[in-house]
Each structure stands twice: as structure tokens, then as C-alpha cells.
Image (cartoon, rainbow, N blue to C red):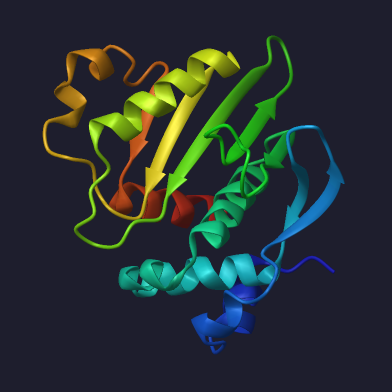
Length: 185
């Protein structure tokens, strides 16, 4: 059964966030050497996004692993051809891998930092992702956070040349907006 966005909102509007985050938000498929294939998002994924849009502070009630699942679900909902959720440990600094095939395939890696308010992502975190990006040979890397980035971080001479062509930094506000737009599709 396929539900419209309005039906999903109605179905999940009354469910407390605490209940939704205990549920499966992505439907797993087979395994690869890099992790678990993601086949689809589930109804609780939409409910979590609805709660976040309504109350952005809700993002701090979600565990780091659940955030990785939410981001993997976003890629699947955005119609990426292959989405892999990497294992909790031994992921080589990659939380989600997404690939689009076609005339020239594109592979992106995403690292998710589920930080509390005031805990800023620093330049070392971003440089670490840049190293992972180089070693993985992915087309692009994303670093998403439930917090913000340290001041002047995008001005760092070792980082700024990668933005936006090879690296995107997605802060709390941009993350919420990104999820809102993907959930609407």
C-alpha cells in the first residue's frame, strides 16, 4: 500500500517522537562488503521528519545511529540507485554511501555528526572526512550535523578549495530543510 504525504502525516501526527525513534525507519535489503543496502523508507521515517520540522529541538532526542538511518533513508527517498548504511564500527569514517548510475556514475559519502547544541564540528573533523573522501575515491563528500560548524571553518585554506565541488557542509538548519524537501517528494 502506497500512502500519500498527507496520509503519512495524518497517520504519524499523533505518534510521540519517542515511539517513532524506536521503530525501523528504513527497510534493509541485502548486504554488501561495505554495509547494509537500503531498499526503502518506512512510515516512521516520515513521522520523525514531521516532528523535526514542527519542533527542531526534537533532533537532540535522536541517537547518532538513528541519524545515520534517517540520512540513508533520505538518499533512498531522493531516488539514489544504491544506498548503503555502513556498520556502526569499522566504517572507515563513512556512515552512508550513495550511488547514482547513468552516463557516468556518481558516488557520495556522508558522515553524520549527531552533536548536542554548542558542540561545534571543528576543522579536524572536516579534514578527516576529506582524507576519507580521497581514499574512497568518491565523487563528493557531505558532512551533516545536528549542530553547527566552528566559525571561519569554511575559510580554512585547506578546506575552502573543496567547497562546494567535492565537499558540502550541512549544518542543523540546512539539514532540517533538506529533510523537509525530500520528505515532500
